[in-house]
Image 1 (cartoon, rainbow, N blue to C red):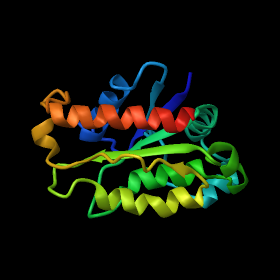
Image 2 (image 1 turned 30 degrees about the vertical axis):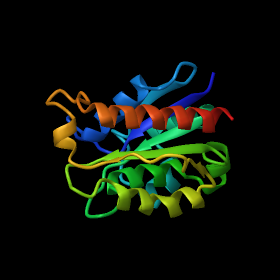
Image 3 (image 1 turned 135 degrees about the horizontal axis):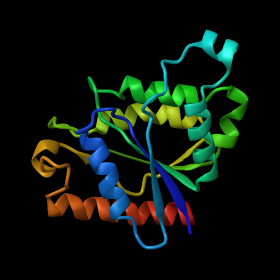
Image 4 (image 1 turned 180 degrees about the vertical axis):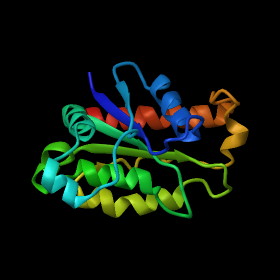
Length: 183
């Protein structure tokens, strides 16, 4: 049974992207397990800290979880027409030391979806992730796209996806990602 590690790139408690990740996990087809992980607690990357103390325990644990999974689902907000710094910082730590990149990310199937209150969806953020994913040696899934605009209108105040059209879009994405990861 294929497994994914899903990570939201927002730290906000009421994050639309955390809600989208939970929804994607619920809509995953039978046979696909989605384990939700967090980037909360990952410090700002500092090469001096890495040299003196190594990779922080929170990072090492997440690296091992990603390495053990069959695939990765990144759920990314869009900040200022690009990827969020806190999410990129987490990936920067996850790629340390550099010789460990193939173990953690090498050839790993990666899905990328996102939600934003803005009108443009997360197209620009997802595009900004592509050079990072290429550098890490991942295999991005391009079979479908999910970049939700107007997230405040499709999620209720409790973070539940209310829009049936968007729900079906996420469900179809997860079916395609499951086939990509499992195939």
